[in-house]
Length: 527
Image 1: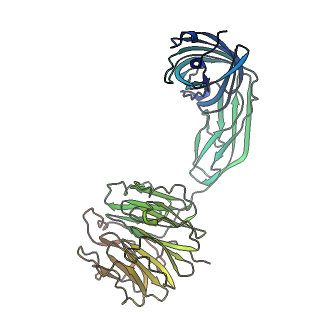
Image 2: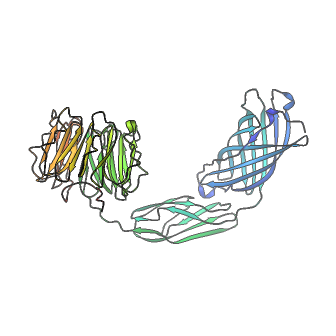
Image 3: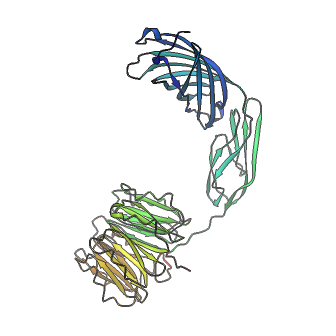
């Protein structure tokens, strides 16, 4: 055999990614193969490299999930008493008939290349014809490779599977994952409720409560094997979820949580922040500048709207008992008193991972405040206007924040505030008693009194502080950028202030509240 030049020394790894129309008819590629192949080399810049070469082939395809399978091959050449090894890599598709096609990349010592292939998997025999060329600078060889390999031993046919979740409330959606071994040609699932599937990895919705045994039967050319998991899926009856209604206000939108756990929203929808119609099972809501956040009854979190800073990346949060939303970040309190945050972290506003013993959080545009179980506060972020100067505060039972100021409600019903005071939004020293709840807007501050009336201080150019005429039946307030919202005891809602986006068009809302006062959503008690 002619000595191989550098340009003909190729390393190949073969990985085939396969798509198909009928999962139950696509061959299983997994197994160990052995065989040989020839390489016809031509058009080399060094003519002495041209020629036909022969190699032994060892190929292993170790996994196949759905239509995708992967493996590796090693070819060995005997060249003048020395053995040279090459490795092969492919990606492609497999048809019902076992036909395969796709593309290749390869290296051989210091030479790389690429190409395309066609082939056939017929039972345990794999054949591939691959045309390729060098891509390394200074190398020009083209190749035609013809490979043939036989599966040495068939993997034992054994059905197995996993799924998640395996319990929950009806309707319960379950994703099933095939973990069977063998040269499988088809699958059949029995979901235990009178329905089944021939997909490899199906999803199924259990609409009725009950306990269900699930079976998977897998087939190869010689027979079948079945795995049955008894009493595997537990579906509990759906129960009516009644929650405490609530309002939240953002920059230009208003959000309402109804007692049936559904959410309504009006106002600016430029970033999709009002698209909450499909939300159900919500127990608390929050509104940021251009995004909306909700806690679900399982204490996971959903968010929609502007996500340019990652402020809606909350899908992996668990055990959340309170959320709040700022201009560009979202913060949540966990049931263990720890805190998580997502979004823009300029000025360190999201640096809350070390906090413990927190029962409530509030956020401004560039700062975050945490209320501890002992009534003291912690804070991170921008302090340019003194909005973090809360170290001496004690006996705090609720905290609110927005833009550049922070407000605290004390256990004796008085209120303290710090930060930017250009429109007197921090002038709360006269609120010395009987305040049950506070809220903070862009340049204004609200106090809900024990007689259910509302007081306000701060900028009132657009009427956002005109709450004196509200009847004494307000059970919760929310302060937006330039508007104010009040939830009444009968579930209706009132609003004042800017209405450029329609954020105050809440006259027809009926959240049907039955609230135990004061209305402080989902705060930890420390008990």
